[in-house]
Length: 228
Image (cartoon, rainbow, N blue to C red; front, side, top):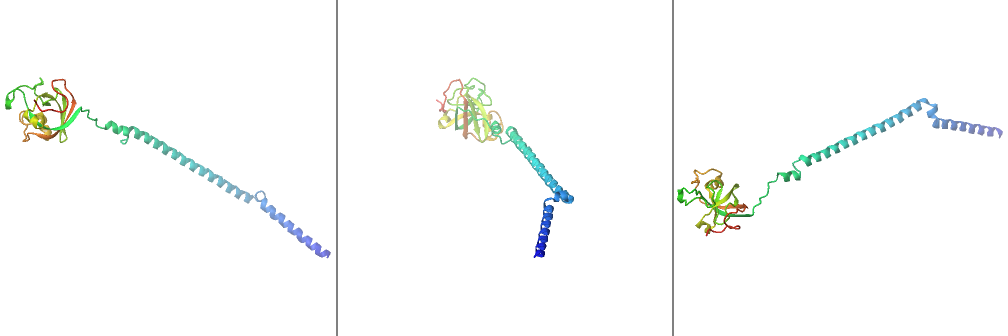
């Protein structure tokens, strides 16, 4: 009986010694085992270095993001100042609107009345200014009224300096144009002479007129009226 107790005690003592040894190895390895301590230090250093690299990469990405943002902002500013899509820029390039006080369409004829008697001329223009390019005749508008005429995308700006046409105005011909203006509206060319337009056309239908300002001479404002 005493021998059995002694054997059990001895066995228990061995187990305790083994447990202490195992515990020391598990918790004291960094202090008692230089190799383990070195390995753990390397792992820790790599982890720290990895975090530092990650931080640098993130920082670089952020810096790139900031640069890109600045470029975008600068680009927006540049577009606002110089870009072709800027509404302000487009508005600056837009063609000015017409400020006509009266507009419409009529049939136009041509004349050249210089008082020379050629082609039955009866005298100098009634407005007091000599016959010239851009001098029109109206049956009713005030003398020296400024008028722009347009036909097939070609335009001429002139003024009312004479009365006419006569009887044709009762058939809707409300403008007489000088030969240079008439020929320019037809094809953009010049007449053969101031008396001859050089074309077979005697009238132009659908001529657009725009009264830009009323003259202070004799006549009536508003829609054109037949002569007499």
